[in-house]
Image 1 (cartoon, rainbow, N blue to C red):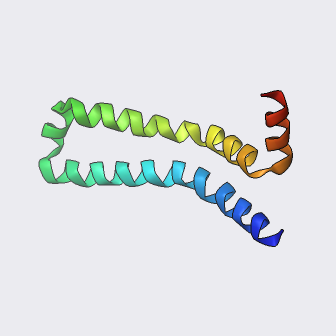
Image 2: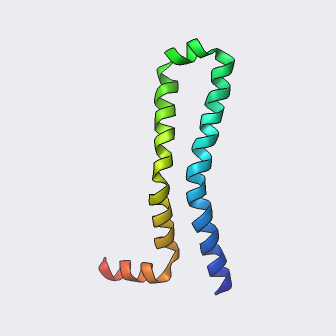
Image 3: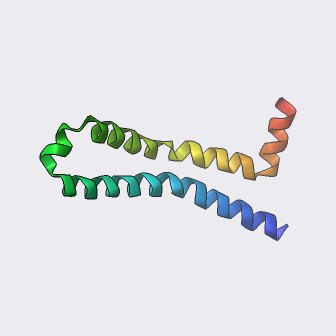
Length: 85
């Protein structure tokens, strides 16, 4: 029982945290790349603009990731979903 509880808690922390960490690391990498190629060239590059907007919008999926993780890790929720399906 304890092993299952610890695994559940680890997933409930790790999955939503990745939604913050991965986009932040991508934005930092893009910033460092922007410095190396110059601000003028980066501002004209559509790939940078589109990627930055998409990565920034991934941060808003934190609540969805957290909810899915709780549903996946909670036996009561899984049982209820199985009954519904």
